[in-house]
Length: 74
Image (cartoon, rainbow, N blue to C red; front, side, top):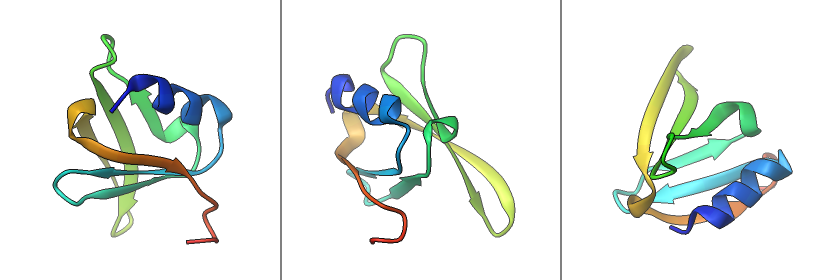
């Protein structure tokens, strides 16, 4: 995945989603839930699951799709 698209999605501060080659899907409600690694080769994604806070380190090379979406629109 090209970091430019991800930078644009983060900068817009609107909901977006990323999908990985392993089939994981991450819903990003706004930019506070995602950050680049210092060399911009991976994303840190923060999310809640079962009322617990988690994070994932997602290498950009494994991201197959990233697109803006509304959180209610599916």
